[in-house]
Structures are given as C-alpha cells and as structure tokens.
Image 1 (cartoon, rainbow, N blue to C red):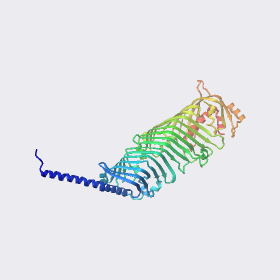
Image 2 (image 1 turned 90 degrees about the horizontal axis):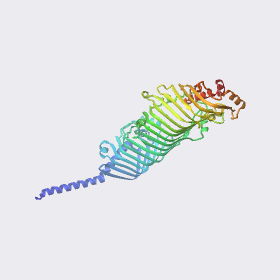
Image 3 (image 1 turned 180 degrees about the vertical axis):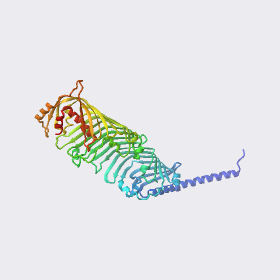
Image 4 (image 1 turned 135 degrees about the vertical axis):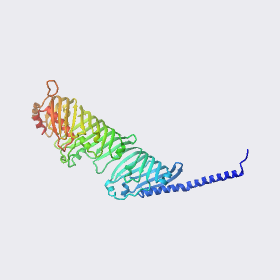
Length: 547
C-alpha cells in the first residue's frame, strides 16, 4: 500500500490546526464576547421600546448560549412600573412583582438582530408576588393627544409562558385601599403569545394567543365606595376549551340590609348573594375579549341563593321608566347569544319592609330549578326567550312558572303556571304588608293561572281550588279585630266556586303596573289580584285591598 505523500500530510496538518484554532477562537468569542453582544443588544432594544417605564432589578443573573438560542436566568428579581407615565399606561399594563426565579429560554438571535423581534421559546416565573395597578380611563384619555413613535421592538413572540404558585393583588387608582386579592395559587399558562408593539392600542386588546389557562383562589374585593364585599373561593379559566368556572361566590352587604334600605333617597333593593358553582361554556371567548359580543352555549348555576330586601316606606323614583325584562336585554351595549342558562337548587328570600307594619312581606322560593333558552339579541337571530321555573312556593307547595318573551315583539309576553296543595296560612308572610286580612284556616288544593301582557298591563285567568277558608282581620299591632273578622268570614267564600261540570270556575283579572315599577310587579300584582278575586267578591276585594 502506497503511503501518502509528505505534501498531503502537511495539508491535513495545516487544516486540522486551522479548524482547531477557529473552534478555539469561536469558543472564546462565544464565551466572552457574543453573550455580551447579545445581552447588550437585548437591553438596548428593550430600553428603546419601554424607556424607564419598566425597571428590572436583580441580585444575580446567568446567561448561556445553546444551538436553540440565548438563555437568561435572574434570581431575586424586582420588576417595577412608572405609573406616572400616563402615555405608556395607555398601551402597556402596570405590573409590579417580586420573585426568586425568572427564566427566559431560547431567545432567537437572528430575529433579535435582523428583525427587531423578541422571539422566545419559554418564559417561567416561579412563586411571584404580583401587583397590578388599574388606572382610571379618564386620566389616560387626557394624554391621548401625545404622538406615538414607532417601537424599537416590533413584536414579542413567546411560545410558552408559565407563572406558577404566585400571589396577586389589583390596586385601583381611584382608591388605593380598593385591592382585589388573589391570595393563593395563582397559576397562568399561555401558548403562542404574540404582542404587537407598534399598535397604538393597548397591547392587552391587540395581543393574540392560542391558549390561556389560569387558576386562582381566595379572591377578595372590598371597594371603599361600594356597599358590598365580594369573594370568590376559586376561578378556573381555559381559553382553548372556552370554559370559565367559579366556585364559592359571595356578594355580601357591609351593613344590616334593613338599615341600608333607609339610607337612599329612592327605594333600592339590598341583596346578599351566594353561589356554589358557575360553569360558563363559551361559544367564542375571543369576541368577549374584544367586547364585541357575548356568545355561549351554556351557563350553569348551582345553589344560587338570593336574599333581597326592600322598603316600601321609601319612595320609588317616579322619573325612571322600567322596561320589561326582555326589552332590557335588547338595550345591552353588545350583542348576546347564549343558548341556555340552567339553575339548579336555587332559592329566593325576598322581604319587603314597611314602617306601618310589624312584619315584612316575605316571598320564599326554594329548591328552585330553571331553564332559560334562546337569549339571542342580534336582529337576525332573535327568537322567543322561554324561561321555565319549578320549585317550592312559600316552603309548602310545589309550583311551576313559564314565561315566553318574544325578542322580535318585546312589548308583549305570555305566561302560565300552577301552585300545588298547600295550607292557606302559608300565604300570610307574602301578604303581610299588603292588607290587614290574614288567612286563619283552609287549604289550597291547586291553583292554575295563565295570562298575557304588554308593557304596562297584565290580563290573566286563574282557577283556584280551595276549601275551608277562614279569615282574620287585624289592626296595625297585629291584634285581631273580632267584629271585622266575623263579617269577613260571612262575606268570603269558604270554598271555590264550581261549575256544573265539577271544574273550578275561572276568575279573570287585569292588573296595570305604574311605569316606574318593574316587570316582576306586573306578574306578582296580577297573581295576587287573581287569588284575592277568587276568595272575595269584587266589591269587598276593592274595600279590603285599599286599606
């Protein structure tokens, strides 16, 4: 075998030495110079874009290069925002946070140098203490006249963003004592986040993302200028699955509800609300983000409890016209398209106080289940909203109620329902401050009703099957007036009127609400009038109900 010539050996030796020298020089360049060049370029681009609006300080930082890009890790980080810069606040969120670990992996070097694009594979923030500052819109619009310059960084692209096990709070500019706490386990994951920094609009509105999932617990809000405290035990949100879940929701009056009813010039409903579970399956969260529409396939509410308090001694605002429920829906600022709303095992406890009565009137609905369908407000999709309810009435009788509310004809509506067997005395809390008449004895076997209405009037028909009725008339101190009670029992019907075919005779009623009273008054007033006409002659009814 012929040996290679000395010339070829020399060529191989020179080539090998050259390659090794280049590799050695490149390693020195990468180790001592390139990381610094990339780091300085990154700092310059960020500074040219955000200036002093954002400030990042840290105790330690580590940088490294890999085939996939440039990596940075910070330790004991403090991130701050200059909230005095109103112009920048119009476009960028005001965020403060502290964390022991802040990692940025695989910054694309070519995109940074040649396209002014920060393209990252992953950002990870572990156990941060977060604070978000919420400015007033008015203070931002005042600075809207300033000229916007083109951003040095065109956009930021993040393949994966992870924030884990954090705590967060939101502080409102109008009152620094108003803080929303998300106390524990704040977790956020985003995929394919793209932020356009050259847009003149707020980046939260213009940014795009393929997936967002977050969860947080123990949310508390107690605004100083509000009558209520707000609490949510937990929230889960998944953008891809278009699912929002809330658990343990409470809205609680800060003071005694009855006393709060006396603090307003006009009559106002004071409420306490609790809800075990809310599941909202959206049809398009993107449109909700843009505030262009609300679309959902289903909203499920489990164990919704409403405690409502009003005081009829406080006057109503007679200058305020109250629309029907479905007409109010059409007046919303953005279109709504929700297929179904479901309520499971809810309750309503509605008390109406009066300074002339010892006891408030009280409506109680328990074991309440409901289905509401066809909530479509866009003109091309409007249909008849059908609301169906069933439960227990006044803790004694099963009941059903169904209303049909045509959105194409919002001045009209129809309804029907029934109340099952119950003691007549169970109605006394409901009529406590409507009349001096109490129901002392008797039984309702069944009560059926149906009706139709327009904006102000309710025309209905009721069949009341009852027996053993005995009345009691009282004074303002709830003491019985024996003479009036005796006369009342002579006049009132002891049982329902039956027709020749053994069916209960129907009673027709007409009720008209005042324009400043609501849709509920239209239904409730008609039903109370229908029942009163079933047990009393018309002339006696007019006398008794006017007292």
